[in-house]
Length: 121
Image (tube, rainbow, N blue to C red):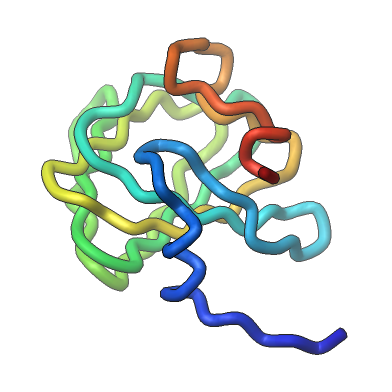
């Protein structure tokens, strides 16, 4: 019942870029891990904040009014309703914390959009 897991080892289960995997839950917040590489898609989550913790590598978070470079160990919360686009030139490992109701790409649907069922798989 009280079993720890190793966060770094959990990334072994992630085989596709931009395809988050749910690894836990704290109240109504899902803990997700993902490997990122390349450019994602401009999107917003109208009702949910989204937390990015960079576990390995770096991530450029683009916003309509600028951009922020996140390095290993950095944490950034993207406020609800904020248009953003994650870009990783090299492979980046990220821990995401977001409400269970958060749609992967907000109201934008692309070939990279993953359902919650896909993320639980």
